[in-house]
Length: 353
Image 1 (cartoon, rainbow, N blue to C red):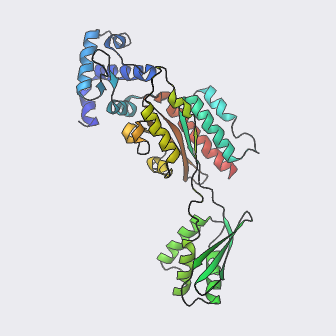
Image 2: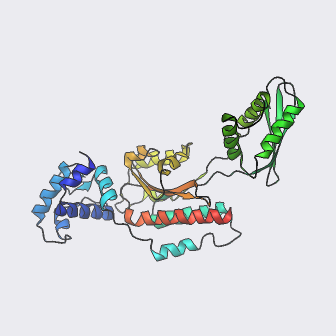
Image 3: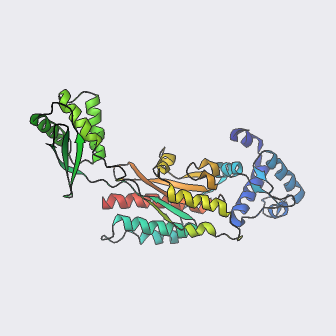
């Protein structure tokens, strides 16, 4: 049954009972009984009536009973419905905002240290593990030069804007001449304009593909081969800051699914394609919530990921941050914190870039 069909079935009374049950579960972590719900409804309804409604909600797949004699808890489908349709999200608390204001206020603090402190504070405020995906760090290029080494190889010299010099050796096409090397270098230098390696590669590749450049065939091949070796494997990758792992081992009930936590820790330690976090949230801005198996990166642990992208001064998404924890999170409190933190990081990057 689709979400739309379920919403058509739920009347006002069923919706209120469902919402109260989920809110109580998220607060306590314990199964919720009909008597506890009946005491907190806007209109007086008997526990027996509430119990009948809970049975109907269970038939719809929104609730489940972990034990025969226990109350109900929401299913993953029920949590998704609650988050999408009934979750009330307010503003970040003034005291929480005040704590963030102390970060990045000093001009001499570098971005890495600021993001590290932000991750620690985000973990502490949400009582979850925090994730901060730092943007790729790429120096802009000031000058490029091609030098012939042998008949089969050449050296491309990259002079960075910060003064660093990097050399890359690559194989060359047959028939290479000094004039070809000069022409290739002149062409590349004409499009540098303070761009990074990635930006230059994209620009030149499009230019060559559209045949807008006036390079001859040999020079074009030289440039293309040089481009292929400009990026060193493993360099300039995103760095993931993880803080508050210990929060995943603590809860009010004193019970932890250690197998799930182990899977989560393994994912956090070994995950190489960290940029996949961006793929989860890059379509549109704002906070995204991934519950249980919806979370492609951490599906084995059955965790919830609440994440948001942050943007640079040009409006481009350059990183992401969020919190990860059990499905029983205080979504109403965590979502505005994550949203505010993402906006704060975007401002910091704009100021320090």
